Amino acid sequence: MIAAGYACMPLNRSPFDPVPPGWKMVSCPECGRDCFESDLCRLLKQDGIKALCTECALEHALNANNKTN
Image (cartoon, rainbow, N blue to C red; front, side, top):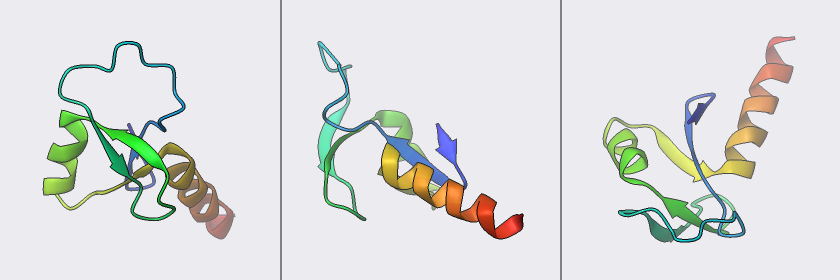
């Protein structure tokens, strides 16, 4: 999932049981909350897309949308 140029990483409080294969626990580089990084997210990061927890990514998308209106 991408929001305004950011990849969304699900927060640790998301109900994954079991955690999908290949996902690992990381910290959001912006807020520090625990979230899950998927294989797809790691590929997107190689292409220069910044990965953030879902809440931070959505906040950026909302802020970008407010600037264009």
